[in-house]
Image (tube, rainbow, N blue to C red):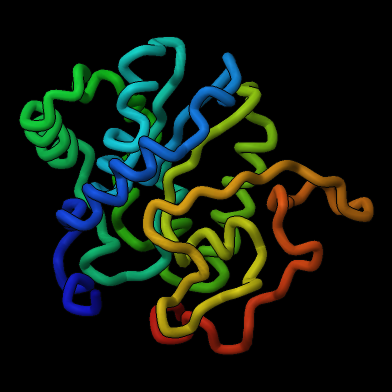
Length: 220
């Protein structure tokens, strides 16, 4: 909701917990390959969504890496999208995991990318069109080169449009075409000598570019 935007990096809400349970119950985990990595934005709600939605996988499959990826953070410079420094974030997540009793702690996550300044909204993390496009492209390149057969990426509704380079069915009222805890399946597709691009499995055949002015209120 709009008033949530003023909360600094909030926890998932009660509704969010219900959505995470639904995600856990409906995601086709039996079809996940042996070679698998889970990645999440280091904002608290996405870490918690990954833990609640894929806690069984994280507990039962120690071979599955769980990496926190700052390039997957949300686009805006609002309090809800500004994370905490690594040390403080670790304390908050450790306390939450102790309470949740999911069977693992913060050592289950790879924190190596959560560098000083990841939450600065400056440099590569800036809330500018240029910076967001650049980190979306960098994250695509990282995933394309990743050795895992599949990657589960837990990220944010606005950033996903930059990451997929597709604004089809964009909803201006919500600021995204994605629902909370919705999952979609993407594969790589060669595109006219321009390298590889994400293609939604079962999605629309034609991608739509960013409508003029979209996110102008949050991006410079």
